[in-house]
Length: 64
Ligand SMILES: [Zn+2]
Image 1 (cartoon, rainbow, N blue to C red):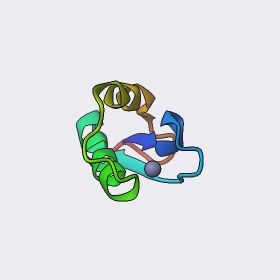
Image 2 (cartoon, rainbow, N blue to C red; image 1 turned 90 degrees about the vertical axis):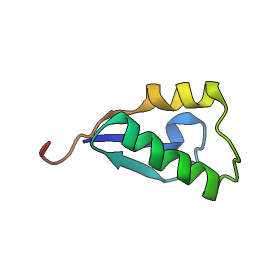
Image 3 (cartoon, rainbow, N blue to C red; image 1 turned 135 degrees about the vertical axis):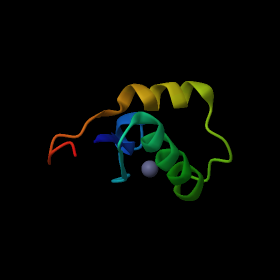
Image 4 (cartoon, helix red, strand yellow; image 1 turned 120 degrees about the horizontal axis):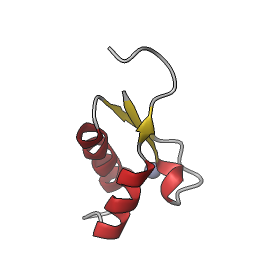
């Protein structure tokens, strides 16, 4: 599993974590979250790049 922590991209008060089987799934969830909870109509390319760079391998649980 891959995971993304919203606070890794400059949202220190946000505890949202997106998890998915790959980076694309994580990004899809993170994008939805940004739209709903951070009122972003679109994700700027630099933020998307930053977010992809912040995706990491999930520390817990087995991979399958
Ligand atoms: Zn957030």
